[in-house]
Amino acid sequence: METEPLNVRGVVRGQGSRYAGTDMERLVVHLTKGDDESTPNPHSLRLPITLVIDGRDYTGGLLLRTEPAPYASLSPDLTDDQGNATNLATVLARAGVAKNAPLAIELAGMRVKLSPS
Image 1: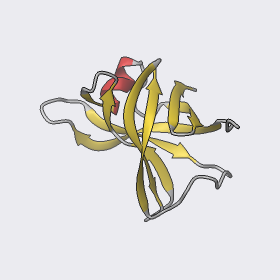
Image 2: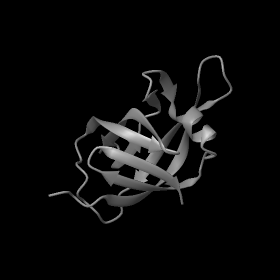
Image 3: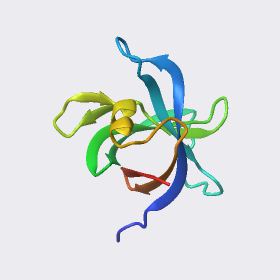
Image 4: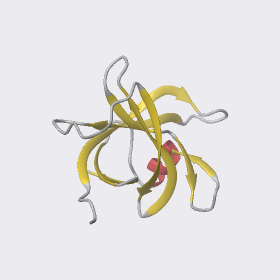
């Protein structure tokens, strides 16, 4: 039996640091849990995911934390479908998504699809 996808909201946030040798800020996507408490809540956990942005698949991580406050975010470090290292900031910029942009996020198992909202 296939599980229905979980749809949540998120927002692109800057980390305040830059990638070495560039002016590009490191970005993460913070997910809003809302009233759905089905997301696991260990103190800190990175789950491997397939991230879909602008129709392309990337390997990344879903970061879950409870300390100092509960939140989930998408890791800034990604690998593209050719096995090349890339980052969330580059992929989001290529898709036309800027810092502080709201996103619609569909979670289906370990597959996470991002769309501008």
